Image (cartoon, rainbow, N blue to C red; front, top):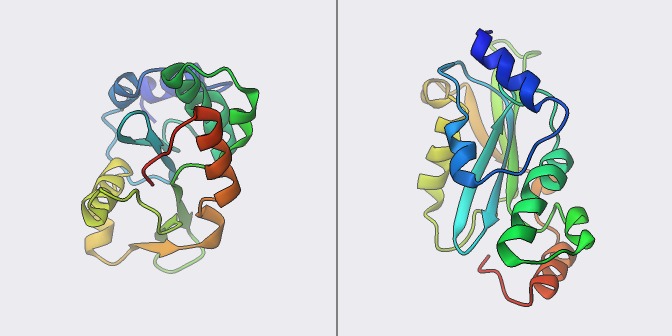
Length: 172
């Protein structure tokens, strides 16, 4: 691991500090190795894909990312200070990349709820996700694939609660 990667991991190890989405996208290393991790689509006036590769955020769960990064961004953007938002981690589309090294050859699985936001081109969005986790070469060789799993699906109650708190519909 490069010294720069270690510094980033140490900097963000204990907690994710709220940043703008633009700042987050600048926090990338030159490391082009395939990696597992998690992603969210966040609606802040428009849909934004936000990725957290394990190479930079090694132990973050969806809950960690939601409570320490996504929820604060939503609260700030919509000027809402509701603590309930911290518990609505299933209110936005999300997914994760898992690595299975028990297979020969090992494989990456991109797990999601088949709920890429409407209005976005699903194939283009999948290509962005593949790129963010440096999986293009493995996809081409059949060593990485998307799979729809129930665990990654949004929960209607969370979606409805978030929309009620925000006082507006979100174009899912």
